[in-house]
Amino acid sequence: MTTENIIKADSRALVHFNVLLKDGSAADSTRVNGKPVWFIFGDGSLTDVIEKSLIGLKAGDEKRLEIHGSEFFGPANPDDIHFMDISQFSADVKLEEGSIIAFEDMMGGTVPGMIREVKGHSVKVDFNHPLADQDIVLEIEIVEVRQ
Image 1: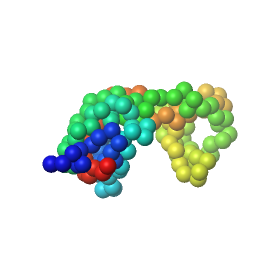
Image 2: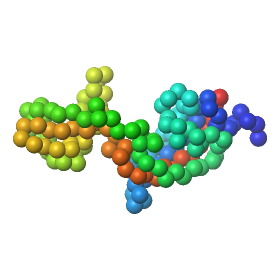
Image 3: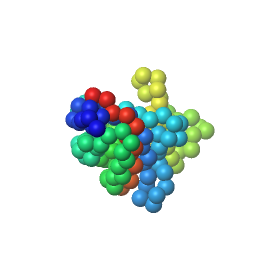
């Protein structure tokens, strides 16, 4: 085995991952669509916890991590909580606490927002990842490693 196939601080790794809740139920998985994703080490897109946990692994290796959601999705940011007027929502949208609604972003894509509270004409929408404040289990399979 050469060190070229091992994840280092500046590697790119093609991975499949499963995000599970503590009760074992699946919250997210790259396997649903059969499309692994690239983890790019050293560019700031991964948290230190994830990078350090995967350094030294190679294609075919698997890793199971019991972590706080912020260690995968990043910490919750209070600036990502917005108050919106209820009139900004169409009448057919159910505004219930805990509901996740797709909002259009500035680039024309969509971003999920969780309804945290509806009070009078004000709707509190949280655009942080819904699992950022929960304990999760992360299962990672390394498919390919590139330097």
